[in-house]
Figure 1 (tube, rainbow, N blue to C red):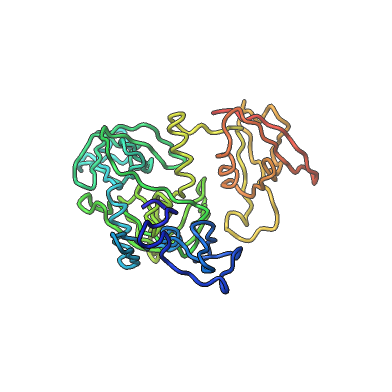
Figure 2: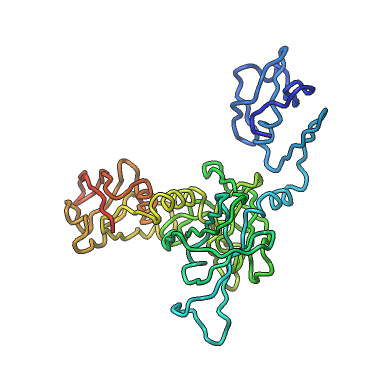
Length: 377
């Protein structure tokens, strides 16, 4: 059934009575689990009704089965339903480590593996860059155990994302979620190939433990306590609607460390796919600036100040054309505040080489505005 379509015929298009007009009057805002319901509601003879499709879209894990004369609403087996929905879109990736890799070991078979996610039905797969960057003779194994040779189409190690392709159509692509609807405490499932290729499409359950984590990386991550092990890299982190909200990337490991996994958020995944498809790579705007983060930013402490300090400027970089100096503090880009190197990198995802932006800088206790044109490294 398509979302927001009203159920047909015998159930009078609307099947779930919320309340009467006395308690839910026309114009009243209806929220389910904190989300405003803006469609799928009708008034019939003084009573308010909501379509089951609209209801299910606001209740995680609810499945609807429509018969000739009935509609079954089922919220049981949520995890198994999610896994069943997403698993056909999850693949195992296996290949041999290149001899040029520093990890190559002549005493082993040098077989390495990871996980990927089908995002187009004609064989396009997204995975982690670190899964495939040193892999040769890449093979993708579908959930039905059929194997296909794959080729690397695009890769970006800074984002830790790569695109590979198999010559196979009719595949089931994943559905990507909306990062604005992801919140700490949301229940999630990680699916992948942990530890052994024989454990393909293993599922683990957890929650979103944190948002916008940088942990001294260049970009922001989602934090989860769903178990993520070696081989899970490149696999999906999905919500209870079966939507991908992240691509699992790395974990903290060590004595006394538990449940510290990190996923590339879906908005970054969408950004990378868009760039890969348009350009075959990530085209980053470039000025040649390096920054020093404040101690509060490094340790994640509350910071009442703003800005990030220019540490150095590369020789012959585009920034040298403009009045930017070492020790200047970058306050904002086109009005968006920048408080860390991660903030800077995230903001630059909005731009391409050749785009124009206004930098607000602080120098000697005064603010100056500089218009820059981004180059390309």
